[in-house]
Amino acid sequence: MCGIFGYVGDKPAAPILIAGLKALEYRGYDSSGLFVPGSGVVRSAGPIANLEVKIDPSLTDTTGIAHTRWATHGVPTEKNAHPHLDMSGTVALVHNGIIENYKELKEGLLAQGITFASDTDSEVLAKLIGTLYKGDLLKAVREALAMVRGTYGIAVTSTHNPKQIVVARMGSPIVLGVGTGANYISSDPAALVPYTKDVVYLEDGECAVIESDGYKVYESSGRNRQKNPEKIDWDIEEVQKQGFEHFMLKEIFDAKEVIDNTIRGRLLHDEFRLVKLGGLEPVLDEIKSLDRLTIVGCGSAYYAGLIGKYILEEYAGLPVDVELGSEYRYKRTVTQGKTAVIAVTQSGETADTLASIRSAKEQGLLTLGIVNVVGSTIARETDAGVYNHAGPEVAVASTKAFVSQLVALVLVTLLVAKERGVAEAELKKIAKELQTLPEVVQTYLRDQKETVARMAEKYARYNDTMFIGRKFHAPLAAEGALKLKEVSYIHAEAYAGGELKHGPIALLDENFPVIALAPEDDVCEKMISNIEEVRARKAPVLAITTEGNDAVVSVADDVLEIPKLHPMLQPIMTTIPLQLFAYYVGTAKGLNVDRPRNLAKSVTVE
Image 1 (cartoon, rainbow, N blue to C red):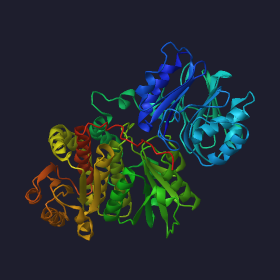
Image 2 (cartoon, one colour; image 1 turned 120 degrees about the horizontal axis):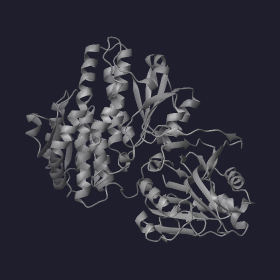
Image 3 (tube, rainbow, N blue to C red; image 1 turned 180 degrees about the vertical axis):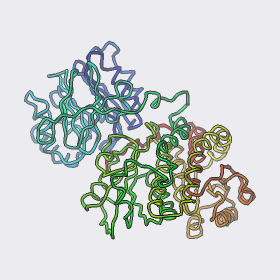
Image 4 (tube, rainbow, N blue to C red; image 1 turned 90 degrees about the vertical axis):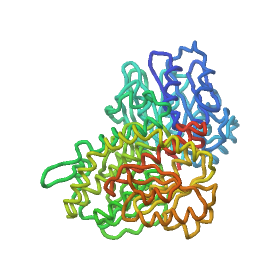
């Protein structure tokens, strides 16, 4: 989850490293640091701005590595910040991941008289490399990693060869940026966009040596591997705020473009086909004959998967299970008939989701992906899949990626439903409405953002909130609660509306408001009954409902109205006010909604 950045070239490294860290700060902001071989290590606790003021502006060294940390082993203090040095102070390392056997390695190093300055597992690896270094840094790194159990993405450099950086990965991403007269290293391709669009993704077990005039990649066996650069399809504007106060708000307002990009070229109008998903075509016959589909995800992606379950079962008649990646990877999985596993992930690097896909492959199951980052590990390791094309998402709380995941799941549902012989008239109606959705969402954002902001300011004073919904909107209630928790630190729970009377209603009083997702649909009357149950306990009710739904307006204290869409598409529309509401509650409380405490964007460790 930590951010790694490195540079080898002919320009002063420190400013480039700082800029790289700022682009990666969403991956961790407990502490940060950098190392340039001619000037040593500079570290700081807290945000990168604290590090920046400590950098000597006269530094001219043209090689360096840098790190922004999300703490795993060791509290977030300056002494635990990376880079870490070996005993001689000449070898420096930055690390993303967890060294599982660091305690036994540390005991062996202590027995050799090695001392430690931090509480981290990463320093153990730095010290170990130092004891093995005999003039060949790549050899020392490879020998050390052969003794390690766990996950890592590392960058290592040394004062002995200040024009070289060695990198390696196992379970944590490392991307090389290939420039002219300079090369770069990052844990996320988005941070490389200001410098180059030519990138090389390292695979698990690979190492690489990076110098200003080139790079060499080595397989785990030590054999050199020729890897040509791939192109990033993002522009620099996509990773900038473009006038918005926060990335989160900018990314909410990206929804129109995101939906456009997700459906572009995928909705057809010919007599025989409805949807074209090129990434799934090689396995389309297998998908058509499936008996069951398992969707795996974590966080917001898991909730997107739950909504996908509802729509796939209702409109495609395909039985679906939804599993948390952190549970699926460890549970005994009983499969019946032809089963496929589909991973939903923004980064394509989520550790638990990746492990779940590998577990499914070991069972001989078809593996699919709904992935945003082209070239990511899950995108490469699944048998087939669908790219979101949502562009980079910088704010920690997922907004536009979640919207694109819902749209992608709608497309998959339409594809599967058509192949399984579901009534075409209904499917064509959905597809036609999906084409108009980008404009509907843009109009809502333009016209209603101030209304949502005023409502958020009113509800920001509460310490507790409950979200309820039914059917497609039951998992969306959980996503709404998650967003509010992430960016406002308000205690928020979520339940299917019918579950209130089975326990959660005991929490409700005049200080425990309820956000009720109640669009006009086939369960709206049931939701109105749930709202009445809430009001009887004097809890304030904010309802999100479709325009003109007077029955809901009459029973709620406050209402946010949204356009009415086909039931399959309605959750996408309802998502928008939920995201805006969380954003404006967070800002009303004066919080940095882009970087919530204790969180990081891409969870690449267990």
